[in-house]
Length: 420
Ligand SMILES: Cc1ncc(COP(=O)(O)O)c(C=O)c1O
Image (cartoon, rainbow, N blue to C red; front, side, top):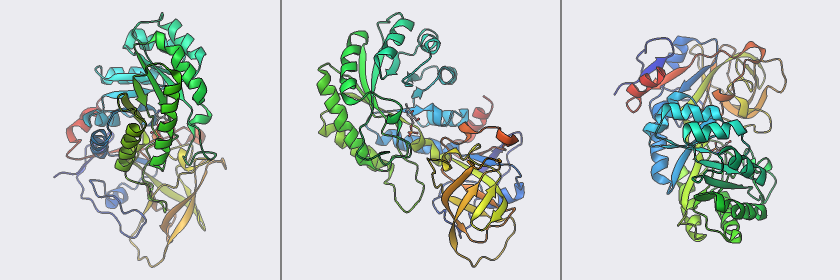
């Protein structure tokens, strides 16, 4: 079995995998790059590591476990290498947010089905998606968007319309990392009215929701499905599709254990049955839950003040979701610059990014050996989603050196993807 790296702009060096064992990360059991390789590379800029083989495996597992059809939410990582791996893993439907994503998917996978699931779309985007790229499925959460879709498609007879429901929450934030129902979705009563309003204008009518991203508890889906059943019943019209959105969590390895993704898929299947929704076409728009595991980021420690580590990457780079109100405590792993004996403890650290902005700080806690030194590297895991996609050049720190891990599953395909 070969383990090779594709390093952008270079030929692939061979390596063997070893991981240091005195750190908080222990879940890497598949093919990956070694700490030795990072040390030999000695990167002075951030290094995003993409593992398309891991993603392909994850996509296969998820599509087999989910009783409906999985749409991949392109926004969370539109890297063509990952899109290709997703396709190889069996994903044939894509949830897009913009005309740029429509064009990207159409160009790479002409046979894929595209769902335009941003509730508020530019009129030009609707028109181009419908007439130039064959998109038929659109979402809306208020009557004005229905008018827009009908106007831009000349009230096409083959539309598939989804009404997005805001998911009522028991507690503020609803236990998720970001609650999307604050921004999008019609309250249940309005959602029923919108279903009724849309019915004459579409060949397929659907109800959709998003429980919020990084949802830790499968029961949150079960509760949302109860609401969905009520909304459909109250609409008094026939509804053919049910789209349960994204929200499937990444495993951040923290103290609060997240159930395996198959617990989510099982709970959802049971709740669909319980609510008598099993005759509807079931869809989901999974993003993070598929792709987070396939990306990591190596950063260098540029300064240390007690538990505060100043890194060469931060919230304006690949660590957007580690900062601010989201504040995800990603699993982190120390790569010492030099071999040294370690007799300390594992302790919580905070991170600060390289920009001069004090918003660029991350509270974690990030669990690392206490002997972290300036010049060491830290590999941060579960960063395949919402990381590289939100990188900026702020303060001149936008440059990275990307590595693509090649293994049996993705080998040749990764090479091809690089040439896209
Ligand atoms: C409409 C829609 N669908 C799906 C997703 C993907 O969500 P997640 O990454 O939580 O699976 C998002 C995330 O922003 C979204 O806005």
